[in-house]
Image (cartoon, rainbow, N blue to C red; front, side, top):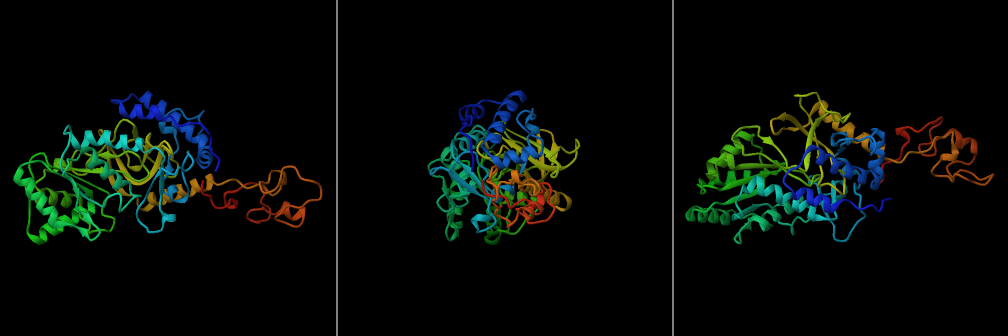
Length: 421
């Protein structure tokens, strides 16, 4: 894998995240610097951008950067820096096969960590320095490649009090310990925070109903859920989910906060509670979002639904701009998250993945121009034969990759499978 020796603008990126807000011009300046760096350091991404007509000279604003479909993280290594023994690799969930899971490489985890803590402090802690926290998810030892496990560990270590703890064990959730902790919080009148996957809260709801329990957590208590159900629990409509949480735990829906994030991002989105559904999601100043047609990557007409594309400056080592498979709608101050793409939109997402893999694959030669064949030297001695065929005439009449006759120019159908880069 060919990589440049240009260094990413890490110091400037960390300073940018640490500052309070930015102008559109400041965001564009750093986005374009990162695009130029990734364009130069990642050959597959460069090929994709060239096919879209996007080069550092032509891209003038963050919204011009072509979004990469998230399934590309499963097909290849999207990275600019070479592997390091101390890098962290976050993997998507959904399968036990590591080669079928999306991978996001973080050679400098301080960017991810600063991105998380800066925004978490604002949106979840809301001015509170520390809270006792209960984590309804496995720890990093159990799930070392989970971005959510790292996110929750960071929340606990940075914002939790000394008595914060995990309630997930190898045998499942320790419900009795959870009930005792919540009873203690009620008795002491101290606010408590529960954080975890959405499906974990469904199990808590079911257990509380089954045992006839309910709590009234003190004022200032809050809940953070994320990730959806992932077939790990029964599915609840959002209205029922937040109504049950509020009723059974005594936390107002304005403090039942949902975090929207993904392995392929280094930054998270939050809402301001779920008293009204669907809630408006928004991010910090170092990420921007738009609604696009998944096939063209272009913005949908104003006011229409589209597939969410995010430009996350925290993604310095992979690609800043990704194309999700989530449907969104515009909203004041952010966007509405409407669920996964279906029907024509889902097909469009699949086509976008195919186009990325096709355009990022190395081009094979034209059969009629042997001097440009990558499998054969540009200068060769007279009388030598092309390795794919016994005679020069056969070579000229067949593509050396796909063996098709009359492959007179490069076609996507003649390209070999995309390699890992």
